[in-house]
Image (cartoon, rainbow, N blue to C red):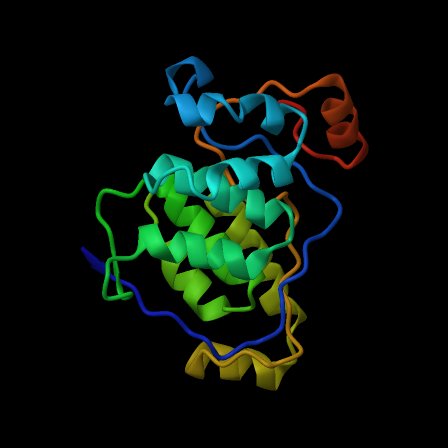
Length: 204
């Protein structure tokens, strides 16, 4: 188990830029998924995240199911619900230690959920403990954090670096669509067109 400390000093939501890019993760084949996840692949292909959330809310508590649910909540902008989902299975029952069996993908999603909820210090802690430091999504998250740091005034930068305090009016713009699925999804034509028009990866 690894100790995870989380800063909750910030209370403003982290915004997401409309300019997304990057295909992330090396997912499993959808044919290898449990039945409940195979049943939502078509919904994911249409970007019907509301439909996936309705299907998965009571579908089980395995990490694969909860990660997919959390990703869809993130992409719907339901950031508080997403954070609650990831906390429930990424952290142990004491809410401090990370479960050692949880994948790096789920841990990065947890870090992203913290970030979009304005918990910048906690997001950085979770990211540092997520494993795979050179993974493209980990690199993107750190780039977003560095860009945000460069936007701070000298005093706010110092307060962040020394005390891990984030101003209430701070936010970290993301340059990607939040959340990583652990399996591949072939998008429908309409969803592919949507992704292309928004600069999103066309294969996810």
